[in-house]
Length: 98
Figure 1 (cartoon, helix red, strand yellow):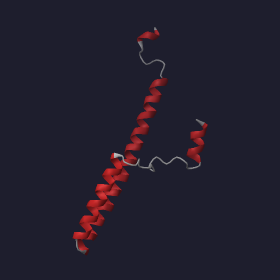
Figure 2: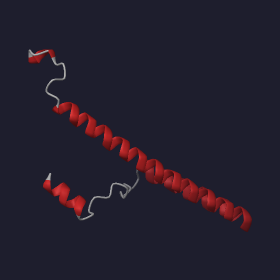
Figure 3: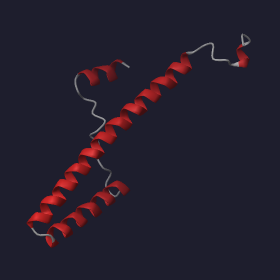
Figure 4: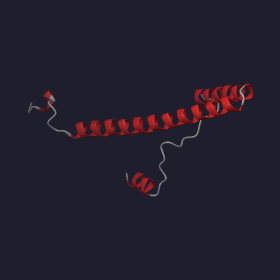
């Protein structure tokens, strides 16, 4: 536990920065997106390229916000689960106190 808290303090824990596993489904999907983006950029004029770039940046922003919200929701759920595990009077009929 102390190591995790030290890592958090020193900024060594960054859940949003993860390496893609070579050959993974994620890496393949990212390659497909990059390929499609390149093809569109080659076909579009300057005005369309600007719009596509804005669209891509906006989608990245949405993805970042969604990732943050999902991280927070997951963390909160984990804390609620831990709190329930610590509740000694949770209605367990095996405890005899019921």
